[in-house]
Amino acid sequence: MTKEKQTALDWIEKNEKRLSDFHQEIWHYAEPAFREYRSAKAYCELLRKEGFEVIEGTGGMPTAFMATFGEGKPVLASYAEYDCTPGNSQKAAPYKAARDGVHPWAAGHTDPHSALGVGALAGIVAAKEAMKKHNLKGTLKFFGEPAEKVCGSKPVHAAKGYYNDIDAAISYHPTYWPAGNTAVWDTHCGSYWSVLFTFECLEPETWIGANMLVHPDNPHAAARCPGALDAVCMMYLVTKSTKEAMYPHTGTWVVNEFIMVGGQCTSDNLPPRISQIQYCWRAPTLAIQEQIYRVLENNAKHVAEINHCKLSIRWITKTRPGLPNHAMADLVYKNMELVGPPRYGEEARKMAREVQKNCGLTPMEDPIDEMCERLVTPQEDEASIRKILPPWQKNYTSDDYVDYTWHAPTARMYTSRAHLKSPDPAYTYPMWVFCATGGIPCMIDPAIFAAGKTISTSLIELLMDPLALKGAQDEFKERTGGGIGGSKWVAPLLPADFEPPVDLRWPEYITTERGREWWIPTPKAGKK
Image 1 (cartoon, rainbow, N blue to C red):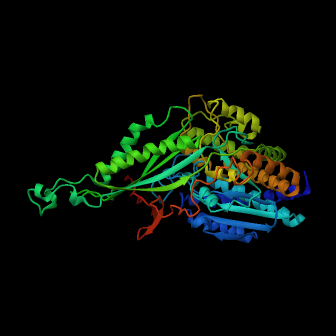
Image 2: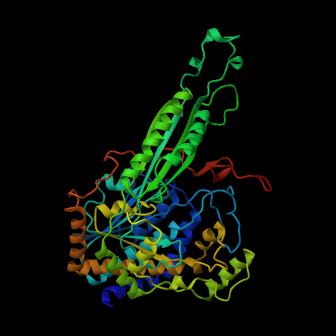
Image 3: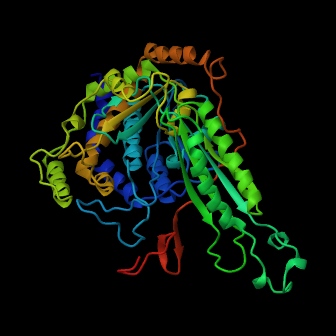
């Protein structure tokens, strides 16, 4: 253990309560994609107090930021996420209960990005403290990355050049499985694309000729044009029908949708004028992504014509499949070994027993999965993942951190939150448990602190060991055929002048004469 690394670890241990309190603040804001106003502001204020120069609104995204400390090479980066998921409102309690004062299906943290952000924050600030105390040269960059739930910000930052001067980066996520104290070896996340189809009924009066009407001057006697609501319903159903034919059932690809605008509540003989449906799909290769889009676009064009609508298409995001870097994975995992896995005490176990009781289970003497407190080598983790994937598949699931991997050697690391043991292999805990335990300090803080320690010591090693950094960069150049712009490099999939979709009707909190509430008004007691 070097004195520089010890300085970072000491800072985290000294500031555990402060970090825990900050995590509670972000967790309770519970803000969804592109609407994380309070969360982003809190990060920017804290980072400025810690001596970072902060630029807000990077990439044209109001809730994004870039914080910088130091100067010169090397330039090392990490990031915070802070968005959560609509429909998952839950108190930080050992029982099922939505948060007070908002609609029961408001947003809440699931996997939780609140912990992701604070774990990375702890690492970057602790590394900064070591730089100051021991006069270490280099630059730390810490990005605020909103809207990960729709893979929204990192492809934008990448397309606009924010990552081009980075020498190495570390990506962190708390795990949603027990055996998760590790770093990714080969199988990084795959590609995620998302598009919005807008149907507008611009000329409903041309649906049927006036000479065909019994009462030409009375629109209520006319045959109503199908319009935008019929279009979005048909798009939904046609895509469900054609999904079977998009691609063979291999490669763990998925397609999901969200009706963003559903006709504006028109219940009359007047046709709904606008509807919007967002599709997102993930796949291990860009070729599969292109094939899925061809089917979606074809569906949308025909649906618009059938329903007498104009079709508009707007891209929301496009990510690239992730690129491995063994040198970075090795370096980060060795520092994880140095600081050790999370440790969960009796307070966490007592809380876990309460959760089990409220799930109708018999509380266990030791209810927390022992794998949460063990390290798993990157190679062991890789072998576990490969068991469920076909040999040709190189990437799996999705997360937009992958765009970092094409601009600098990047490590993807995890720490385990407190996972409850299952009483039976067929039993799955309800979703509220997953949401609640991410907000209970004794069940999430150890994962945050272990992440912060691993990130800080890894950053310090990269600052102090030019050969370690060179090894990671040499591997990056080999995998990309020469680095950024190389023969095997994949450029950002969005254009440099891409306009982030922050102006769309994303779920959010609003303020009216009723006060601050979820975009779906809070029901009266006993009503839904």
